[in-house]
Amino acid sequence: MKLGKMFAIFFVFMAVITVVSAVNLEITSVDINNKDRVVANGHTLNYKYERGEKLSIDVCVQALTDVTDAQVEADIFGYRYSNRDTTHPTTDTTSTFDLSENDSDCETLNLVVPELIDMDYYKLRIAVADRDGIETEQDYELHIQGVAADSAVQVKDFSFNPEEVIAGRAFTATVQVRNYGTSDLKDLKVTVEVPDLNIKASGYMDELNSDDSKTFEELLLRIPDCAKAGTYPVDITVDFDEYEQTVTSGSITVQSSDTCATTAPTTANQPDKTVISVPNSQEVAQGTGIVYPIVIANSGSASVTYSLSIAGASTWATTRIDPSSVVVVPNGQSKTVYLYVSANPDAELGDKVMTLTVDSGTESKQVTLTSRITKSAGADTTGFKNALEIGLVVLVIILLIIGLIIGFNKMKDNKQESEPYY
Image (cartoon, rainbow, N blue to C red; front, side):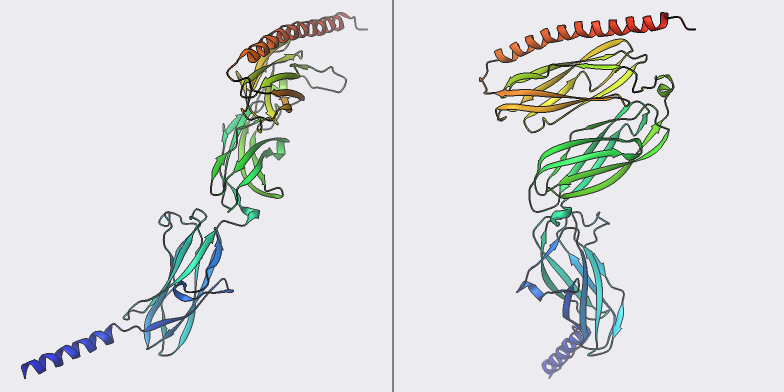
C-alpha cells in the first residue's frame, strides 16, 4: 500500500514538472534580408553573406499555449572581438511580447556581420522562450565571405606627422589599408591631397593579399609658403582592382609663417632661380646599387626649402634619399643630396625609368632618370665601385658648372644694380 502511494506521488510530481517546464513556443520560419529562406539545423542550403553585411532576420513563432513575456534572441558565436566590437553587434534580443494559444507572431532582429570575422562557416542560433517555458533553439548555417570587390580595400588607419605644420614646411602621410575581400590584389595606388592648398602626393603598392594589411611608403607633402593659418581637409584616395577606389578624409592644421613676406615673387620675366644637376643615366647590376648625386643650386634672393621625391622605381628597386628628402638651400648657394638606388636581384634587364621631383612650393621641377639593369655578376662589387667613381667625377664637374652659373648670375645682378637711374 505504501509502495502504491509512492508511485502515485512520483507520477504527480513528474506531471507537475512537465506542466511547469513545457515547451510553449516553436519557431515556424526564419527569413534573412527578406529574401533568403533558410532551413533549420543546416540540413540543406548554406547561404553566403559578406563581411560588413547587415542582417535583418524575421523570426516567426507559434504559441503552443498561452505565453507571457516571450522573447526571441539571435546570435552568431565564434567572433573573437564580439565583446568589444560595438559597431558590429553579433547578438540581438527582442522586447517581450504575449501570445495566446495557437497564435503566431513575427519579430525582427538585426545583426551585422563583422568585418574582422574569419571567412568560414558559422551557426546563426535562434532561441525563443517565455517566462516559464523551456527555451527552444534552432541553428542555421551561414557562409561568411569577403566583401564585394568594389569595396574590398578599406583604409584601416592613417596618420600625419606632424599634425600641425608651419607654412613652408613639409609633413608626411602614412596610410594603412586592409583587403577584406576574397581575392589577392595588385598595383594599388594611394593619393593624399589637400585640395584647398593645391598639393598632393601619390604612392604605390605592388600587392595586397586577401585578409592582409599593409602600409604604403610615407608620402611627403610641402605646405606652400603663403598658406593661411587654419585647419584644412585632407582627402585620402586608394585606387585598386583597375576601376575601384575607396575614399576617406582627415585634416591638417597649418600655422602661419614669416617666409611668405621675405620671399621674392616669381614672374614669367624673371630667370629660373633653381638649377638641378644630376647624371641622367647610370648602369647597375641586379642585386647591387648605384648613387645619383643631386646638386640643387639656389640663385634667388632668399633661402628655399626643397622637397624631393622619386616615382616609378618601386617595382624594380628600392630607393632612399640621403641625408634627407627635405633640404634647405640658402640664397646664392648649392647643396648636394644623394639618391641611392638598389636594384632587386630579380629586376628585369634593360632600361628602367624613374622620375625625380624637386618641389619648392613655388617651383616644381621633374627630371627623368634612367637606370640600365645588367645581369648580376654575383658577389663582384667592381661595377658598383666603378659607378661610384664615375658619379664622383660627374659631381665635381657639376659643382664647377654650378659655381660658374651662380657667379654669372651675381655678376649680372651687380651690373644691374650699378646702372644709373634717371
